[in-house]
Amino acid sequence: MSTKAVPVPERNPYGALELKQYINKSTIRGFLVTASLLLLFLIYHFISGATKTEETAPPLAPIANVELVNLDAPAEEVEAPPPPTPEQIVPSGPAARAGTPTPIPDAEIAPDLQEFADMDVLDRASSEGGDGVDMGDFADNIDWEGDGGVQVETREEEPNPDDFVAVEKQPGMDIVELQKLVEYPKLAKEAGVEGRVIVKALIDKSGGVRKTLVEYTDNSLLNQAAIDAIKNYKNFTPAIQNNQPVMVWISIPIRFKLR
Image (cartoon, rainbow, N blue to C red; front, side, top):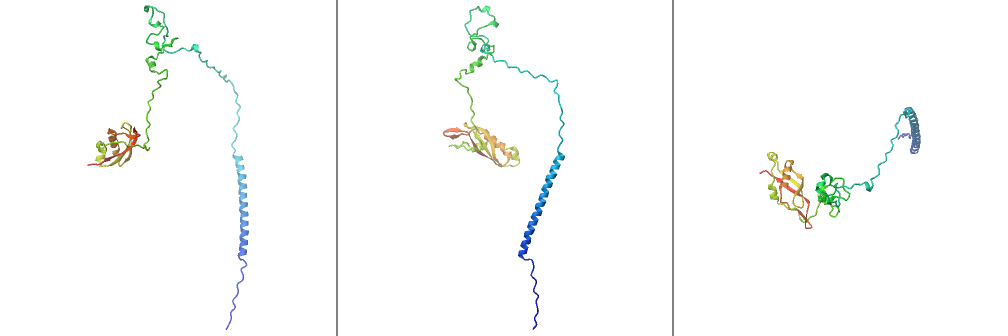
């Protein structure tokens, strides 16, 4: 029996320890190279930027010497006139003054020389006489004492369509009678259009329709006919809140069906 010698492979000089050392050296070398390149780039950037700023700086505008000649003198300030004194104030009203005139025959008094007020303007005349501007009967309608005050008509604020108003009783109506007022639009009838329109109406305290808007529609050809029917309906009853009528919005469906 013969034996055969098997050669033993040589040990690799590079193992895990050598690979770790190589990796560490390569990492440090790469960091130093990268930092050096970055530093050089920053230095180049600052140098080129400073040079470019000096080269592209805009030239200064030339300074022009201007002489101020032939200028007008400053305007003099004009003082406002003082307010009039009480002696200078002439009361307004009829030109005739109030008082007791000296009896003179009527024939000797010309119409344009009347000095004292007669009974028609006596209640509006002053003891010194006015400037001739007579407000006439309009002065009788003015509350000069301020007791009566000014009558201002207050308008009730209308709720928004999306506002919720809690009421004990909703506005009433006869939907059958309302539906009878609907006039089918001719164009919709010729096109065979059917559907439903929901109109939101603002019913005031007296049961009248104040405003309308289309909340939903199957076809816009039907909208105006639905609105007209609601406006022509006169038998709405107002909503009740705390035993008092109130203004609220309600949704009213109107149907359009061809027979």
